[in-house]
Length: 115
Length: 116
Image (tube, rainbow over all chains, first blue to last red; front, top):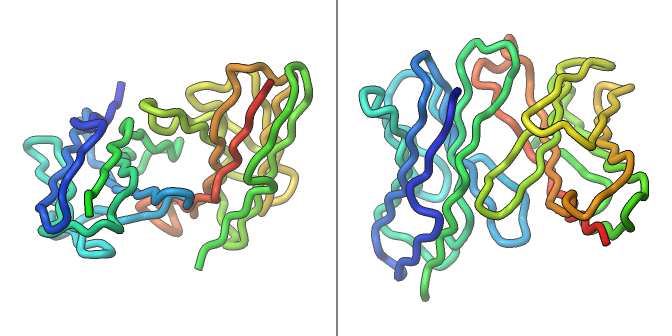
């Protein structure tokens, strides 16, 4: 069965630190990959997504993610975090061309940025 | 901008009550989804619909039913609410794969349901 694994459930960083959140998936076929973010009290919103082309994807608010097919990974990065990045981050995958449209979700990583 | 709205942000119900959660999207999306979100479990799909009157079970459909009579509206029904259905419920919508091959989903603000 397809699954998505996010390595850390909680991450605490100081402002200006660099961030990398891990995401690995298990699926042998072609995939679409997503990172969503949920700020406190707000709805889930799309941070970035990979469909095809350049495996380094840039999203909103200075985030980027790199798709490494050989490692089944899609890690999220930001060179210098801000207090406003405090949020929960979710990685999600769907099988391209799948007939059931289902996104497979990771358990989420709560990121806390200390001011 | 895509807009997905949910009828209530907070809801408190008693065990055994019938509960209706409503979701409306304004982007003419074919697909609509209901998830529940619980700490440490991520999002789990309850039901989804790929067309009016069409529905498919997700990973945890037990205790829930859905209704999609109009394209823009997708309702989640708890026939007899139980305390283990206390959760955050999220609605999402997306275009079909022919319109958007990435199937990007857009979410509503969520309904936090407490069953006493």
